[in-house]
Length: 238
Image (cartoon, rainbow, N blue to C red; front, side, top):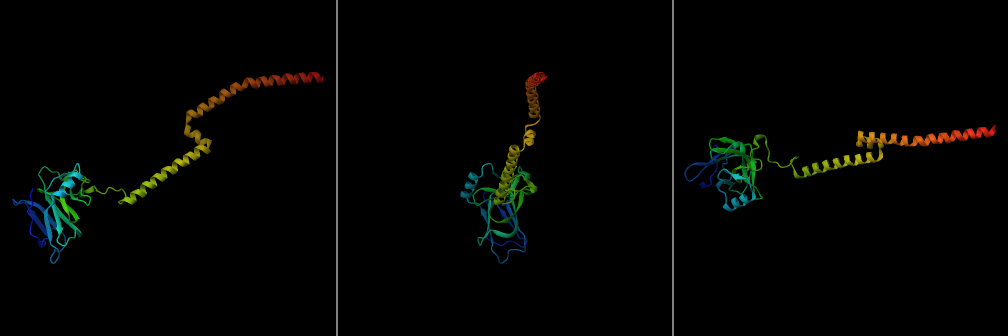
């Protein structure tokens, strides 16, 4: 889809810029909150470079681009808006907004979801961003389909090092539990019996009974010999 590149211009009083294709169809609508852009850098809108699209396509398997990719920038070379902007991009009627996200090409050259909480407005899908770059509506991207309750943050704690610390702490805790169990098993017979369970206790009782039965004849023989020797000693005394 070819995108008509508008002449560099500040936003209107409504802070809204509409981008159309060569047939006059709306391709994108960009809206920035605030009191306008008078006296500031102008907004530049145009198609994304084909080389960037090829790199993103190869680096993002499983991601489908559902809109015309649009590059949005400021004339002073900055990209951080210091606030939020809404970017609306035209999609086909078959695109379900629940499965989509507003995505951009990140520094690694891959498509990445910026806002999974997109809204369908007619033939436009709208999402929010705090920076300007190359945008498109994505299907199958990291975060696409998660909706307003989803997040594209890959970290549990919110940061890489936070996740490293959390994982290290969990591993250290598990190892300390295992070490305590080993010490108890080695030093406390009752704990070993509990770990081994009821079968072990029954087997030990059975072994003790068998041992007693084996020792009983020996004990009776010892008593008999003792009684005989005692009787013989008594007779000799008399």
